Image (cartoon, rainbow, N blue to C red; front, side, top):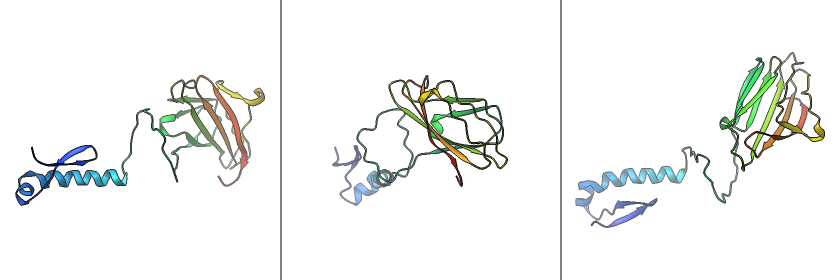
Length: 174
């Protein structure tokens, strides 16, 4: 068996001389070294498929914004797999918000909604019945043209109930 060296838990041949290099080691090792380079720079996406990442130290990170754009239809659908921060501009009244793919029961899933009025304003937005608000008082979105409200909601029962709150309302320039 040829000498081996470790490469991200894979074994590649240890190329000792020109004969090893010419036979097969050079080609294989070049590909494995390229893989090492890709793993070292971490330039690819990782899909953990709901598996646990334990004790990471995260610095300078971002969260994906799910920008829905203009919303004029009666129903807005939010797919949590596309991002937990969701922005939309109201160009009509919204009577139904549906949320799909929250985290499974026993895990916490957070949603941040950025709801902006278009240049006309006065559009309404109805929150789902599953949203439970402090004091049992459902807020009204700001009706002023071009203003943005930010709402947060968390669930730990796969979206059956959401504890919802107002982050802030009537922002300009967002």
